[in-house]
Image 1: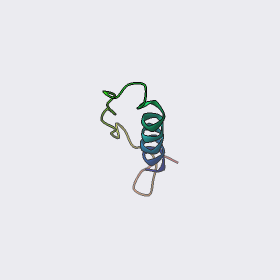
Image 2 (image 1 turned 135 degrees about the vertical axis):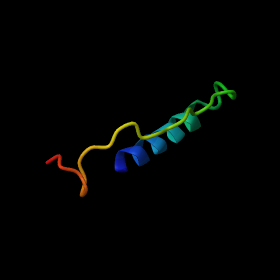
Image 3 (image 1 turned 180 degrees about the vertical axis):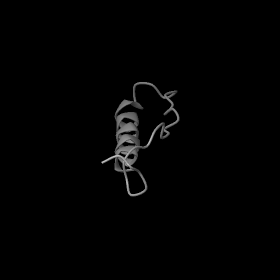
Image 4 (image 1 turned 90 degrees about the vertical axis):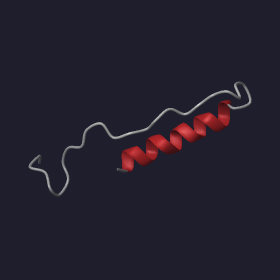
Length: 44
């Protein structure tokens, strides 16, 4: 989940830096595709 937060923050930062060049820019959907590891997983 930390990676998802980092990607979201980075996308907003890039948007903020580029909005003066292209006002029609859109941030696409950010979603989790696959989760491995964690407390309830058998991946160690």
